[in-house]
Amino acid sequence: MRSSNPVFSRRGFSRDNGYAGFNTAPQAGYAQGNPYAQNPYAQNPYAQGGVQYGAPPQAPVTTDRMTMDDVVVRSAITLGTVAVGAVLAWALLPVSATSYGLAVGSALVAFVLAMVQSFKRTPSPALILGYAAFEGVFLGVISEMYNSRWSGAPFQAVLGTMAVSGATLLVYKAGWIRVTARYARMGMAIAMAFLVVMAVNLLLVAFGVAEHGGLRSFGPLGALVGIVAILLGAFFLTLDFKQIEDGIAYGAPRSESWLAAFGLTVTLVWIYLEMLRLVAIFTNND
Image 1 (cartoon, rainbow, N blue to C red):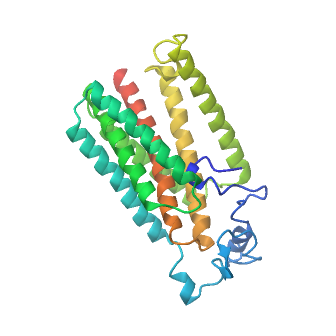
Image 2: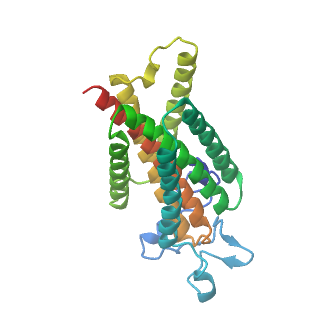
């Protein structure tokens, strides 16, 4: 089962609760205090050219391995680019039909860049940062539009996104959520069903069959759908955390930290947009 995150599309869950690219040897080895016990090179995607990245640390190799610090730094750069793009768009583009058109165009460009990166075999910092910049412009315009009608909604959405991501990381690190193949299959089945329902709802709204946004209305039903979407975002985060953790355990190349940062950014943007809508719904009902 492949990850829901397009950034990790070439890494999937295998039937033995591991990953098609990351086998279960490290997971078994952790229980014995040795993360590379039980044939760590089997199915390791980073064992190539005679160099086993998953091998016990050696001076020439360790300097090129991905670390958590690498992921944190790249994530900060990527999210910072999103933030800068959003702030500039908010400050320079007043709410209007023109700015809305620019927002839609930026979203489309960001989507194309994300898809190009997703199908590349190697990470491209230029594509990733380009995606972040255009996504930031989109978020800035949309956030300003929401703020003009529901004052303070973007700030509350940011706090909500931080709360959801922090809580998800907490329960993941505490072991309350165990990312297995079954967990991924169930979550992905729910996610696919959700996307199908949302696509059908969009068509019904477009053809005038469903009024006021249908399932995405600014009412109780819309709030329920928004909560489900945020929970799905938290599910995507757990997959991201697990894949980052396994990549580090297998000694993934340092360049892979850009993919990790990209994946986290995609998921956090999802959560922020859904949180923004949810805040607006609750504010609208006050």
